[in-house]
Amino acid sequence: MTNTDNITFSTGTLIGFGAGGAMMILAALTYFFILRKKIKLNVKALIAGAVVFPVFALGLKNILQYPLLIADTPIAKAAADNIWLFYFIGAVCAGLFEETGRFIAFKTVLKNCRSREDSVSYGLGHGGFEAVYFGFSTISLVAMGLLVNNSGVDAVLKGAEGAARESAIEQVRGYAEQTLLSGLLGGFERIPAIALHIGLSMLVFAAARQKGKGGLFPLAIFLHALVDFVIAFYKEGCFGLAVFEVIFAVMSAAVLFGAYKLVYNKMDRNEV
Image (tube, rainbow, N blue to C red):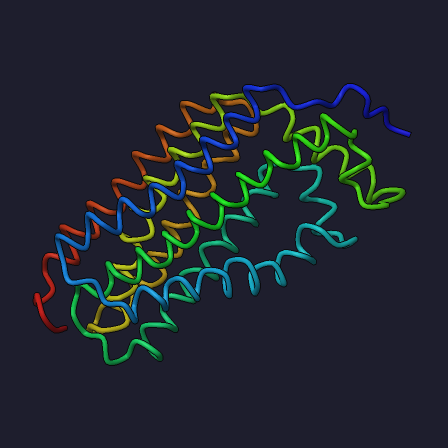
């Protein structure tokens, strides 16, 4: 049985989770108040983005990822032994499902929303909900850490046994090994992440609305997967967390700027 006596959460780790989670939520709120002054936000598009994220990114995507990454299948076993394959599958699934969710939303519930600014509203709803979700999830780790420090790891394992217990212990250990800096960088990451979602929403909106622009949909899938795949280089130790966050921010900004200059700016302001 794995020894869990050495698993404790430092004060820095707990502060990092709390501050990082708060930063994620603050990032979403800041985007909302800034954009509300710049453009006319579409509440329907905001809500659609906030609904599509959990349905496609947390629900449908995980249904596909289970046999590919978790279940006892040849592909999952191969991915477990190959970090590049593991994160490649994860990145492709994220791009495929989230961008498909955007496209379906623009073609169905938002089919009458034709202002180019509706794409920004949708992107804010999608990326903002993701930031708030991860924010509260990260803050909840503070409570878990305090429980582990006071009562031990077994207090959070909920009777898990065998392989499930070992997996849960390693997960808790991973949380405990996080630092104050990693927590703060995690909070910072939501700033470019929301920008990325807005840029991708511009691309998919144009693909759904404009004739001859259908190719922007697979482009959005590719760009989403490409940005997400960068984490594999960090996990493999090619560079540190701070460098990863800088690369992620630059790539996200490039997607937003490119979509804005090459697609969004060329749409009619009121209708496409």
